[in-house]
Image (cartoon, rainbow, N blue to C red; front, side, top):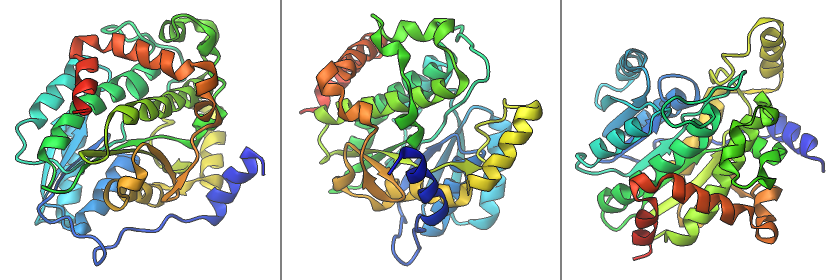
Length: 331
C-alpha cells in the first residue's frame, strides 16, 4: 500500500478513540501542554479536564491569548487550577526560564510538547542564528524535552513514571531531508536552496523522530516514558495561518475535505500522555497505536545520519549541559 493510500485510509476510515472519564482519573495530577491557546493544544487541554486533572499549565507564547484560553476552559471545569505560563519556543532563554519555573511545582506528571510552526518564507532566528522552523520544531523542542525529563523523573507520582509526549507528524515519512549530506547538517538549514515550506516542516518532524530514538537509547522507561505521536492531518490547528491568498483558500478547502477536526486529532495527544504505558517508550504512535517510524529513521543505522544529528544537537545545546543531562538519565 502506497504512503498516499495509507494516509487517506487513516484520514477517512480510522477515528482515534476518546479517553473517557470512567476509564482514567487524573485527580491529583499536574500536566503541561505547550502551544495550548489554539488548535490541538487547546483541544487536548479541553479533553484533559473531564479526566479531573487537578492542575493544568498552558504554556503559550502570547499571554493574552493564553488567558483567553484559560477563561474558556475554566468555565467548563471550575474545579481545576489552570495556569498560563509564558513559553517562547523561538528563544532558548525562554525555554530555560520555563523549565526553571517547573522546578517550583510540587509535582509534574506529564508534559505534551505540541508547539510548532510552519513558515511560508525562510526566516533566520535573530537570537540563535538558525532557521526558524528548525529552531522551534526541533532545536527548542529538544531542549525543552531534555530540561523537563529530570523534573518529570523527580516529581511524577511515586511508583509511576512521568510522561513526556512530543507531537510529531506522519509527514516525516515524506521528508526529502536534502540537508543530510552536508557537514555539518544543522548549518545547511540556513542555505536558501534547501528551503521549501512543506519539506522544511516535514523534515523538522523527521528530526524529532531521530531525537526520540537516540534520547530513549539513554533514558530508561522506569523514570520517564517518552513517546512521539501523530495526530493526523487536522483542520483548525492554526498551523497554516501564514498560507494566504488563493493558495490559502485552496488549501483551506483541501483541509476541510481531508482533515480531521482538532478535537478528534487531540484524542491522540491525550492517549499518548495518559493511556500509553512503558510499551510506548521510544516509540511512534499513530491513531492511538504503536506504528513504525519514518523509513529514513528506521534505516539511519546504515548511514549514520541519526548519530551525526545527535552529536550536532548535543554540541548546539552544550550551553544547557545537554550531554550531562543525558548521562544522568542512565543512572
